[in-house]
Every structure is written in C-alpha cells, then in structure tokens.
Image (cartoon, helix red, strand yellow):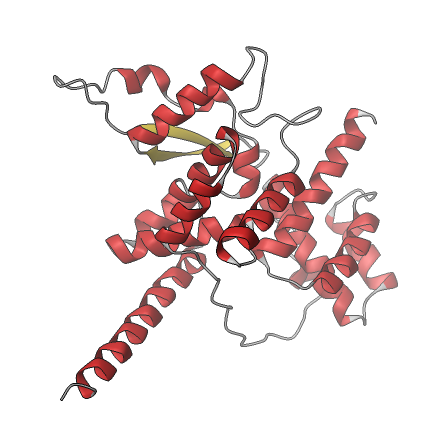
Length: 294
C-alpha cells in the first residue's frame, strides 16, 4: 500500500469509529454511511463539488443526506473546515433529544484494569479514562507528548512528584490542549516507555506502519468487557465515564469542556444532564428506603 492509501484506510477507520462510538449508530446504518464515504473520499471536497454531488444525485434521499451530513461533521472536525450542509442542502429541523451515553462506574473501570493482561493495555485504559481522551487522540500519542522534564522538577522535599501534563494535538491545523495527569499515571507511562518501547518508536502504542489500529483496541475492550463485566465496552464509553465522574465531583462544566476539547459547550451539557438524572435516581432510592422503614 502507498502512504496515501494507508492514510485513506486509517481515515476510513476513524470515520467508522466516529459513527459507532460517538454517534451510536447501528451496524446497518454504519455500512450505509461507509458506502457514501467511499464516494466522498475520491472527491475534491470543495463546497461546489459537494453541492454538485448532492444536488445532482442524492437530493431527495433523506438517508443519504444524513450520511453526507455525518461525514461532513467528521471531516470538518478532523481537518478544521467549515463546510455547512445546511447551506447547500437545507433539511427539516428535528427537536430530538440527545441520547444519554452509557458509562462505566469507577469500580468497573478498576475491574477492567485488573483484568488487562498486558502493560500496554493497562496504560491505554488509564489514559482513556483518567485523561478522557478520544480514541484517535489516544492512538496518536507519542512519548514526547508528556512534560517529562518539568514533571521531574515537581518533586517536593519528601521526594513526592506532582501532577504531570499531556499535550493533545487536535485536528490537522495543529491546535493543542493540555491535560493534567496524576503522578502515578505519569510514573506508569514512564516505566512502560522504558521497558517496552524502542528508541525509534514514533507512537506510544505502535502498530504496523503507524499507530495501533483502532479496531485492535476496540476488540480488546469488547473482549474484556464481556469477560469481566458482561457488557459491550467501547473506547468512547471510557471518555463518557470520565466526563460523568468529573462533573459529579466538581460540577464545573467550563473546566470539563476545556479538558475534553469540546468546541461547542452544548456538547458538554450532556454530562450535566447525566448528573441530574443520577440525583433523581438516588433520591428515589432514598424515598423508598425511608418509606419502607417501620
């Protein structure tokens, strides 16, 4: 495969992961959308080209419009573009509530961690949950993304190290954000790099001709999720779990938005709603407990 073919293959996998994990679509819908993705991937993605593509061939097909819209959202996010399908193919607005994502409890995350049988998988799980990373961010990490030199200087008079920092690159434009990491996680990553990586490794979790394949990590989580929790665990569930635990502990939506790298604050609001629903659930349990007392 050429470098261009490898990149196109990796982007297709990223789009598939976006549809499955972030959007929560069924497999039939994912296959449908990937069909249209393959058409788009060979196009010059300018506004005129997209308009011509949509209007001439698929103007009256609602499912196709949804597929196009899903890809453009993914494309705009990945390449920091602003192609707006609503301007070239307006659709009816739907007042549809966003689905509450499924999360794992801290105990379930710990059980998964203890059940992982390789240091690499343990590190991947720690970074997914405690840093709240997207799977694409996780797999594109390099050993140099951690502030090792500054971290060593955080040692106090008792020899205890402070929090570390992780630099996350967002999109093709080079936008970056910093994520705080617990010192124990920094130490685990440092030891993993020393024992298991070669000096020439560009990626923290190397695969063949680049970073680990997304599907490899998906299969690991699915397998362990079924074995240990009897649940269908996917990578984005760990990010959702971080968001849920963070907002319950701090109540700070603005800080969570910055940590997760959400450009739209409305995206972060889902975790506030999850927190409110948990409060109602706990209050119902409280009422039942009180009413059942004699």
